[in-house]
Image (cartoon, rainbow, N blue to C red; front, side):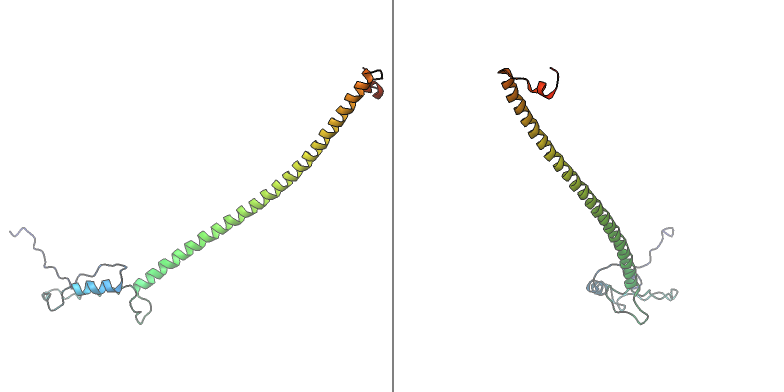
Amino acid sequence: MESEKRKAPFDAAIVPPKKSCSSSAAAAAAAAAAPSPSQTPAAPASDPAPAPAALPAVGAAVDSHGLSALDSMSNTMLQKQNANLQRSLATSRTKLNETSAQLSSTQQRLTHCETALSVLDRHWAQLDEQFAQMLARFTSADAESERGGESVLVQLGVPA
């Protein structure tokens, strides 16, 4: 029986509370659930170590030396997050500006191409009309030449 280790009795007063980001009401409920010092057995005289101080709840009052450790940790974390978000925002704005410039350049090229195509289409339509007029002239001239006159090509000096 001596080989078995004896377990010390559980003393809730010396166990530090768990760290959590719960409200102060939850911390108060946890403190109320712990047995009062009058209900817990006294610590043996051989263990004079004092009980560790409980951490303040989130949103607890600021002590005389500045922010509590929990508040300063959350402030540090928030500052790091803010810095990361600012970098991300700057990167996004840079990409947006680059994309906007690229879009503007592409729109200018498209406008230039559309203008060139419009001019080409207009010239093509004029050329098509001129060919239709020439074909009508040659067709009517050939009809006259078959009736007894010279061919239009001969009149132009093109050998037959």
